[in-house]
Amino acid sequence: MSEQQHPVADTETWVFTHPDVWTVSTPVVWHDGEDDVAFLRRYGYGPCLDEQWSGITLGIEPVGYGVRYAALGPEASYQYAMLVQLARTACRPDEAQCVVVWLPRFPDLMAFLARYGAIGNRQVDQEMLHEIERILEKTFVTWHGHGSSNCCQACDPHLYRRLQQARQARMQS
Ligand SMILES: [Zn+2]
Image (cartoon, rainbow, N blue to C red):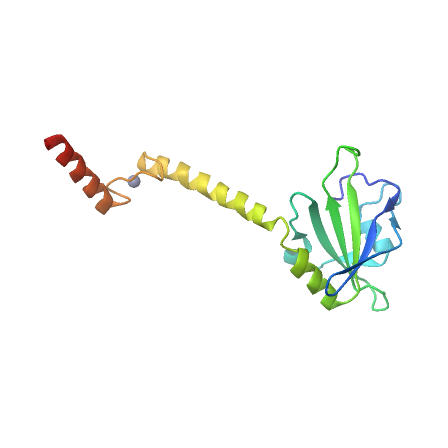
């Protein structure tokens, strides 16, 4: 995210509260040349410190993706911030567009993730399954000389024998 140039302009900003309440908030402003981390640090937020949780929390494929930040100090009005990177649109093709969602407290974070965390994940899962399928297909051809929808003596001896028998029966009839 940080390699993209952000517009030095107001960024749409919302407060999300449990169970599903969206309230428009004062837009946040990017400074020239500021990356995501610097930008949110200026507002008092830092990225997750645990590597495995720091990245994508929303895989919202058709929309973009979201990264979770947390308040650096306990006095913050909002304990969490979700920086949602939107997919670029035709009207602003060269600019990364973001939406900031403030999440005041832990239940709000949970409600947000429960409600919107899975958006696009099905598509991501499906792409991953397609990829696995493709790899299996290639592997089959390499190992067995046939695709995964066929069989040979090695991968399915029972079916292979039955098919052989059926073919012999056909030839004899
Ligand atoms: Zn085989």
